[in-house]
Image 1: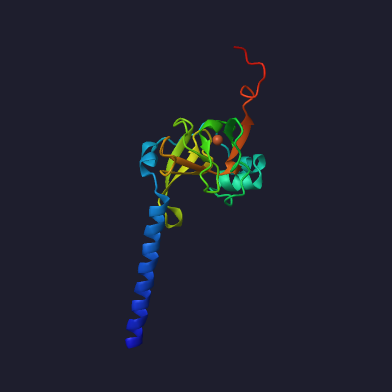
Image 2: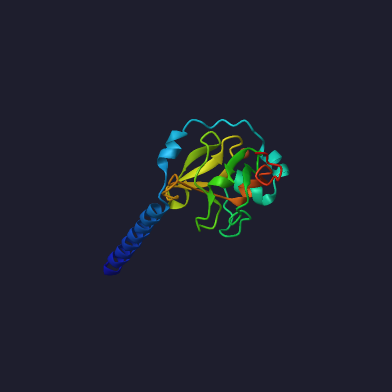
Length: 183
Ligand code: FE
């Protein structure tokens, strides 16, 4: 019987440690539930395609992230340290989602933006992996982009859009690079 009590105590102790860890991680990720609530009910998309159609159009990596809510490995994405002038479009439907003007280096390992037009993205409450986070998807096709956190630049919006490079397609701003500007 003594051994049983010891075992039960160990199990309870282990469970408490696990619970503490989950609460700690949740705190670190500083979720933005209000954004998710703000967009509730706004989940109709202009672009609606079958899984097979998306599979045909997207690369395997794009499909995994955009359609299956995958995440590219940190510090591996092509736009993590990309700072040219231009627009970042949805890799699924081509809609312009972010601009280079609001992109910054957050050091988190994924492209970060401090602003998104509310008509361009939808927010969904995400409780996966024992965390409470806010997922960001393209409002035109529903493609998974990444997550949003409230630890962005304080002198800007205070918001950090943490976005997969795979979900984006950069388009250079030809106007800013033009030499034919007239005064
Ligand atoms: Fe899209």
